[in-house]
Image (cartoon, rainbow, N blue to C red):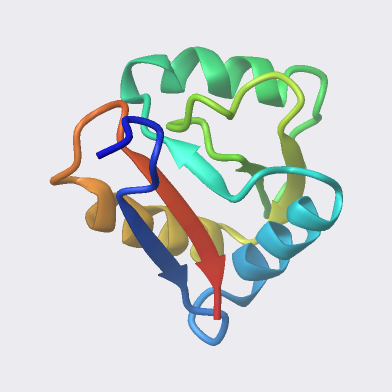
Length: 112
């Protein structure tokens, strides 16, 4: 087995998290990869880097793609304002899907 192969695919349900799903699609259209290499230990630093210079907007979260928990996240991530309910729901849903996988696992994220 190749060490760089994708271990699993996670589907983000468009009907359940429409804003986050739209952001993922938009980020991909802007050249961001839908492959996430899990890297939880870098999440805090990646989040700081990706959100640097992006102002807080009342009533919205700043959603990042690739996500901060991915090695591909951080500086240069695509940022979109989304409602907290959608963003946090999708983040929790994705985290639950990834919890049994270790850092270094490659995951493909698709929207359906």
